[in-house]
Structure formats: C-alpha cells, structure tokens
Image (cartoon, rainbow over all chains, first blue to last red; front, side, top):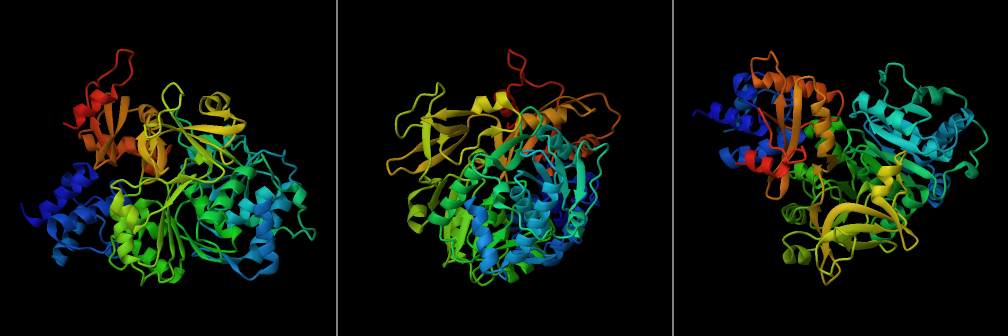
Length: 78
Length: 505
C-alpha cells in the first residue's frame, strides 16, 4: 500500500466510516467525522505508525480538512 | 450569602482587579458587580415569580457570569446553557424547568418557534439606565434556595435539571478555598462550557478569592494554534480541566512550564485520571501540584480529592479519587442498600451539605436517587468504588448505563431514544467500545427502516444530521453499523452483554 492509502485507511479506522475511502475529498470536520478528540487520536496514531510527530498547534483545520489533504500534509513532513 | 458578600468585598476594596478575561473583553470586579446589579434590577422590575429560574444562553463571554450573578442577586436561580446545545434541547429545558425568562448573552439570535417565555438580549438589559440604589442583599438567594440548575443527560430522552442551592455551593466553595492551594488573587483557567459543572470548579473558587478567570473558547479548542497563543498570554496559575483536555495539550511538545511559567496547580475532575498523564505533567511542570477529584453534578461538582504525588504514582497503577471533604461522608452499600465490609466494592452514597435537593420538577426520579440519612441529604451515585485501609477511595465504574466520554456525562438510553426516533431507524442500541479500560468511542447498532440510500454511509450521514438537531455533538456515536436483528433478552429489551460480544469479536 502506498503512503496515501495508508493514511486514508488510518482515517477510515479513526472515523469508523468507509466514506473516507469512497470520497477522499470529504471535509471531515463539516461531515462530523472528526472532532478535537478524534484529531488527538489521529496524531497519536500518525506518530506510532509513521513516526511523524505533528505538534497539535500545526494541525490547522483549514488545511488538514480532507483525507487527501491530510495525506499531502503528512507526505510533506515525512 | 457568604460567597456573594465576599465578591462584593473584592468589588469594593479592589475594584480594578480583573475578574474575567475572554478573547472579546476583560472586566474588573467593580464592573462585574455593577453590571450584575443592573441585571438584578432589571429582573426584579419584571416581577418574576421568585424561584422561577432564568435560563442564561451563551458561550464564554463575561456577559455570562455577570448574568449569573445578576440572577442570584435578584433571588432567581439560573440555568447555564452553552451555545453548543441544539435549540430543540434548549426548548425542552425551558419547558421542563418552567423558566420565567431567557437572557440571551450569546450575541446571536436564538431561533425558536413560538417561545413560551420572553427572551431578552443581554445588550438590551445593559441599555437601560442603571438604578442608583444598590440591590438590597435581602433579595439575594440564600440557604436552601436554588443558586443554579444544571441540566444533564437523562435516560428517558429528556435532560434532567440538578438543583444546586446557595448552601450546596457555599459548602463546595469553602472546601476548595480551604483544602487546595488556590488562594491569593490567582489566575484561573476555565476550559469547560458553563452547562458543564466542571466550570463551577474554577468560576466560584476564583471569585471567592479575588482571582481572575481566563476563559478558553470553543474556537480555541477547534484550533489548537489559537489555544496555545492564548495559553502563552494567559499567565495561568490554577489549571482546571478534564484529563482529556490536558491530554490534547500534552500532544504539543511546547506544553511545558516554559509556556505557563506561573502554573502552580492542576485540578482534574470529570473522568478517570490516568497515571500516564500525571507522569508527563510532573516531567513537564516540575513546579506544579496535581490534584485528582471526584464528584457527580448532584453533589456540587466534587466531593473527594487527593494530591497526586510522585509517591502516589509509584504506589498505585490506578489512581485513587482520594478522601471525602470534611463535611461529607461516603457510604459503600450493596444492591440491598446494606453497608459492605470495609475494602469491599459497593455503590457510593454521598451524604452531606453539598448534596442537591433533587431534580427540578421530577419528584419520582428524585425519590429514586435522593433520600435523608441521619438528618442529612444523601445521593445514590450509581458509581461503584471501594475504600482501602488508608481511607483512600478507588473508583470501579458505573452500575448502570451512564457513561463518561471525554468528561461528558451521558445516558446510553437517552442516545438510543433519540436514534430510535429517527425516521430511518426501526430500533437502535448504543454500546461503548473500550480501549484499555477507557471508552474509545460509542457504537450505534441499528436496525434500519427501508430506505433509498445507495450506501450505508449516506444513511449514516442522514441519521447523524437528524441527531445533531436534538442532542449535543459529543453525544452522537462515532460509529454506526447496521444489522437485520439485534439480540434481545426474554423481556424484550436489548441484550447488551450478548451484543457487546457480537460486535467486539
């Protein structure tokens, strides 16, 4: 699995919804799939699985809003 | 009432001391007192029947606390309702509380069809000429009269209002001021919205000691960058939050003593405090003391406490909730209401002056959980616990379907009730999914009606949208899954045990 797909399946696990895979351009916050606590879980998992440390202050909802965009941001930090 | 007198003293002797800081404004004790006088004068002019509560709607602006004090100075209890509560639920609260009036302190319109009470905008009250005569303290709420009423999740699908009297609150505040190192005009952080009684843990102890409240808004929690910018400027000395909130902050490496150099006390309440969080805090804030507390809304915020020292952390894998406050007893009973042997697990019964008189307008519900014990008010918590030989209490979970998620308390049955009301749902069950003894998320298991959605996720979004209009977002389960049938017990109720085994396979 490439990196982008790994990120998207992690998001599907955290959001507990396959819509993340079907529509990777969905706004996770508008759709109610992710909230502040989901964000914390996501960043914990990102550190554990990919070894990327994202300070929570870097996580801006305007940029980290869709599965595709989150994958792009994380790829940049790899 | 002593608390109000203390606030008045600060307003008179130190009128320029800051009482409240929010992103939109800062107010001093002098202004707090003067503005709340104006609100009290307005309410007294309306000839409201004494004791009918006033619902105060808004978020973290200073207008919220000036309204609270205005209400109690006019002899009326207030019901704090945060803007995150959907309007339909607000209407339920208005109806069930028979509120005499709504103060809208939110600076946004409250859209209600045919409201049964008058809604007055905060700014409108402030436009009126200030009365020259101070409000006579004989108008203030006192003794057994209600000071505030906080609505919490109820298993029937309707929220229930916990009545907290002036006496209840005074007992709580006296304990906080006496037993915690929080006196001396300190700076208090307030993370919790006012509809959640964790906010009372910083609001009144701060006001009772001439302290200053620094408010955290939901915009900051949504955008941690703003939160950290605010924290850096906050000069926080006393930190009060849920463990979940501090855990979120710990996700950032800059959350250290350098960010908050004056921080001296962490107060936690609302959910289980994990050892791992305390270890990180001790490492990053070597100068700060950490306190764990426990208590239900029905006993005024918290009734037990313990300082979590390095020694405590080395001794216990699961932290104790501590010892009861001086004026309160905790009994441990079995299912027949008989005391268990010391050290054995039992349901906690809280007995003392901070125990509420009961749920507003809900006699039978009140009689089920409140009673008199040796001349004092007592409350059956539904929380299981045991006490060890040193007198420390250890929490061991619920004996019913109430849960806590990120510090928010809710009844699974209430969530089920609302999901079952959806036009897409035949029947539903909600089960918590655990990870390491902590609820990770809620799972809604649903038998759907016939529907025209192509994909399950579309059905899920449709149901979630309906839910968002009736319950706060923290009560909406994260995962929805669909079944043709659910396991039932012989008496026709959902068999949760079987179901849990089924989904957790």
